[in-house]
Length: 456
Image 1 (cartoon, rainbow, N blue to C red):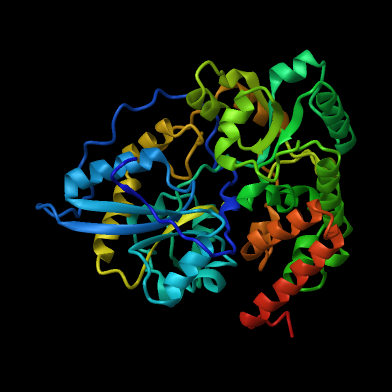
Image 2 (cartoon, rainbow, N blue to C red):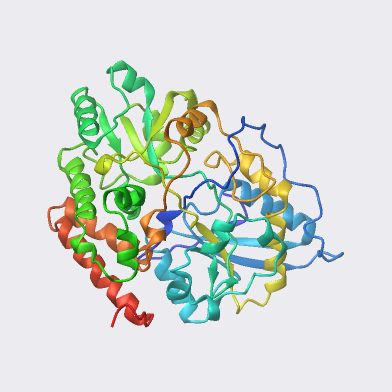
């Protein structure tokens, strides 16, 4: 374990986290051939404003599991070599993170830097950024970050967060091409075809879908990620929900997708271990050949190749999540982001760290050395799409709509609660309609707390 990482073990806390939404749309970069990974972080000065003498400072950084990538930790080590500023990463399990952060903010014990999910509807209600986070509007890197991402990090016309994420990382189905070829299967173009594919795979003795329900957030992706399709089926639904002119409970297309997800589960297409499967084991389990598909992004094959000796990224392909006959891709410019606490005694040093991470050469190092990423949401970075990824975008086009957790207010804060409800549905304790009713109740509570005029 690297010295920059200290594990924060938290017991007895249940609650919500917004970790699942870390994905997004295209920032205008055209797919390019994979670039050779850099061998070391930038040797340049940390920032133009760096002090000539090193500082003896430690910045505490609280983040959810899987938000901090190994290349960022390498960059933090180089940053410390150049400046003397040490980054102390405190990682909390994803199903506990939001409650831990909320408690620290309420107690005035916030770390110097804290992670959070961006989203223009959520920064105020979730994090109270005007009182808890530093205004970053005038930082130089803001001008180079994708405007769609900046919009999601803005509250009342001020930028409060730095988001460094892959703008092409839509949640899609990643499938094992060898299994499909062996069984004579084609990419499904409808939900009915998807059911047939799953039946054939299950009959062969292979579990059709790897789904890590135990993390509490991943299985929720099957529902709000289909914003593109919902708007095709029921044009204007998002606007009606935003303005409280329609309820989730009454939206047939939303009940349809939850019902289809439940059907997949009840038919055994997620296997016997879905409730105990973990997101961290996705690469290992997909490489084993025991599973044919999973919901992930286009970076998974490269992750599998790196994590499991003998595996090849070329063995995997992609298609959109086909619930409700979906064939579209989504945009989600809200993603795991970095905030500086107003209570920090080292605000300038934290800004210095943000400036260092966003130097073009350091962004390129992060991209080249993180298998999960194929592009980054900053100008001047060379993407690394491979032939399979190019073919995917050629087939399905560029992203055509926004996921519902970002498009609709008061939905994303419920992510983990929705996950609990969906797990109850898996156990036959709730129905899809019950889940939608609960979403409406929680939205009303959040809206009234925010004094939203559409809820009177």
